[in-house]
Length: 540
Image (cartoon, rainbow, N blue to C red):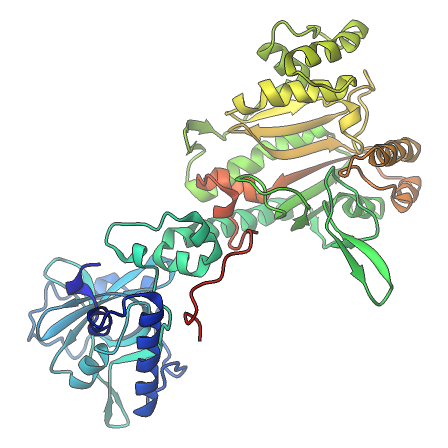
């Protein structure tokens, strides 16, 4: 911001050589004390508003095309009380324009005349970032901008200033972001101080509003179809429902070691056993894994389960859901995501097996054109080792590794990848034609997995064998393998109807629909490495 647009207090601080953080905060604390010495509360809570800035009517402001410095506003015009954060002050001799930002990124100019002596004097003690209250009628400036003329309030015959300080900002806003036309680009700063990021970059808050729209529309979508929303446990004695390393904690009252859940799957399927044929949960998941643009150890998913349905039914359901969410957020089903233009989220989506996709990407791979043959089963591990350099001797792991290396990033348009190997799907129902594969799909968009679904395994004996295989894998050093869950097997012994279930990562979905490059941009407070201490004296 140019010097002419700084507040007097800010200009004085710079002139005194106190433009550094500690100096500015010291100056602001002195202002706080001065206000208190004069009986003014710098953190007041007794000035109600009549309207949010974004909700002010535009038509009434249009009644006055422009307002000369000495003009009067019609006494019959409505008066409004508003509040917002002070972001800019323009000095005009005997008048000032104060720029306030309210909720939803809304902006409003306050017009203040020198003849309004008490309010004009108060404005001299304001700093950028302060929360300010104002009262008066609306009008249009000569440039056609909506503004509010600050005028005193009459209360029981006495006049009170039409401008008040509600909250003094002790800490100045990030300097880089105050330069006109500039944005703070230090992502680490933005994520650590999301509150400051949202002040200077209101578009960051808009992403969180759209995320709320996504979650709300999800609830409507499933509620309309007879699903029941349930809350399940976050602390579990066993680790299951996904391949992931858990966070561990201890419950003192029971002297019991517990895991933070890595999925809601097993408890939701217990509810299906109990008779809730359509159930879903939107909740937090915790996985003790790495950090990246697409991974945060704490994230949000929706999981839903439908009795008497197959994974093919869930493909149809997912297409309808994504189409609806995209329309709700963007007003269209064609979106751009980073460098990917024209991503189509209208039905239908492409459907292909993992084997077909690997064969298309690697025509020399020993993959049969039809069902998997014994020759393919025997030859693929050797091929995978040849082209990858290191590969498992197990067919299923090799197929997945080839898919991840040569196919995954190319799936820009929505694609249901179907028929995963059984060895990587410990909770999925085996395919009736070839039990080496399961009835499962993952939905990929712009090269990233967004959803995972399958026809559920409901044979308790088969499930026990899968759990035992997971236990063996854990003993061999696989920290992401599941625990043995006998209670879940017992639940299946009571009989779970044929069921299909799906999980969708809400964070990644929000990234897609809001065109955000990092998961940190769609989570208000992402996990970060500890920050270094700030300069001594910056606090108070």
